[in-house]
Image (cartoon, rainbow, N blue to C red; front, side, top):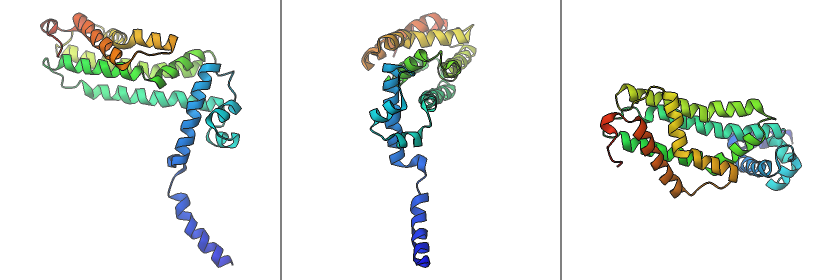
Length: 235
């Protein structure tokens, strides 16, 4: 009997260890359901007004399954914020290389492409939802709100500032204060739309965002483009 049980155990071991828990499709689906339910409840009821029981019920899970994935509301809220921070950091890191090698001939189209992608990224529904959550709970989670700003919009602004400083050194932009130029660029392409989405909860359509972003880039170029580029029509 002992030999048979040992053989069965040996046969079972590869199956149990071949798929790490974090990459198990069932775990991924479960965590996604929990995060989706928590975002909706936190936004509609607030952090204090939402219980782990509420989240489990909304996600269609047992409390045991919920607690197996997240020990408490704080951990769940932090997970939600951290996930979007990671996306923003990836975008910011790409900016360091994206505008490298820009020439006078491709400055305008590159900035238009960047402005459009920045606006569409900032106005993603999950990002808008997160901003509303962080703003609503900033008193309870002041350090998390500060971390979100520093590592998400803050890093994007720093990356833009670095890129604009290089473009200024290359004579393509007139930039005395790169950080201010970065703030102008970001708000011109997405600021008004983001304010509306955060306060009202309904972001503009993608087509509208593209139009606003294009106009924002043109306004940015009217202020910051080097003299020889100021009258160049957008491609």
